[in-house]
Length: 457
Image 1: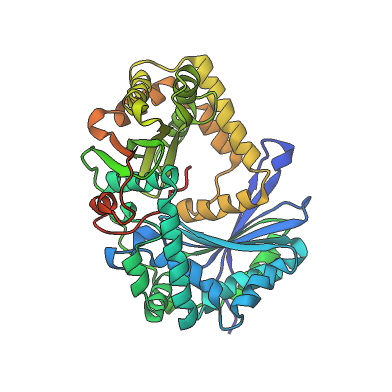
Image 2: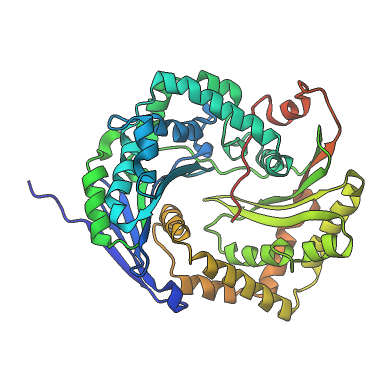
């Protein structure tokens, strides 16, 4: 029987500069998998990713960490390749293979010379469809991830952001650690992993994204060959993603065997689909992104209280995080928090000077454009955009929205977010404790294990 024609979409993206000239195309395979590409013919490489619309927020307390553990385990053998063959597959031709898990997405990706595009998608598709989760490797990898958990706890300037997520989202899955907990990891079975994959690794949740020297028709041909037969009826990909409640702001302090104090202060913010997305990004750049930012110039340059100080924004499908961070001497913690609060209050009460606003917009746009000179970054943009918006926004459209941000919009966001009753604070204070003392961690997480720092937008 003749198969139905693909649904295809083509969007010519007019370049903001010649260096970023390209266009993206999207096709929906017969089984529902979305294939998106951006051909860049003047390079010799290609970056390909298979994205799955599943992450730690789709878990429950009892299986928290399973998304990340599966990401590890697919590299331990498939029906077609051993663990060693997977490791050598792309490296033997000068490429690389990797993966990551976040709050809402999992991505398996590869980069290679364009002549090995078929091999790259073959291996990635094999990982996603045919992982066997061998029992022997299962037990070994549990130990590896448990060591990853423990290593995270030894990195306070990283792990504090995970404590901060917990303070903001409480028992909601957005407060879960991406890496899960040690008890959960020890309990996972082969059957648990297979059930989770069968439910979530289904066509309606999958996007194949590629950027570099590969034509769209060729990518669609390869996707059809390697993953186009994945049955759409294998699962519906359904999940319950309840929107988080706004928790009462609070201050939490934890004693840690560290030399320096660490502070994270902020609030829940806006989703990536919010109309306030671009004003928030401009505000964040102005406040704490780079050496010219207000936080850096005031806290580090004027007072010398910190080596590292910044703000960040994380935006998800229906929620977001605004955070500010400082690492400082324990004696400077009260003064540092006071200085951060004063900067937030300035944004609430005083319009940003026009010249400063224009400089900040130029900085944000420049950072964005420079990032697009990386082929892997372009692939990441394609995959995440299709999962969040089902399309890829033209760069010029994004630049126009940044240019359109006004002083009033920034002040309105500051007045909405930077209210004392919405601002939570997490502080790590240096105080040596016996190695086995985990009271602070248990108090925060209800005896769940450590988490990973979220990606910053």
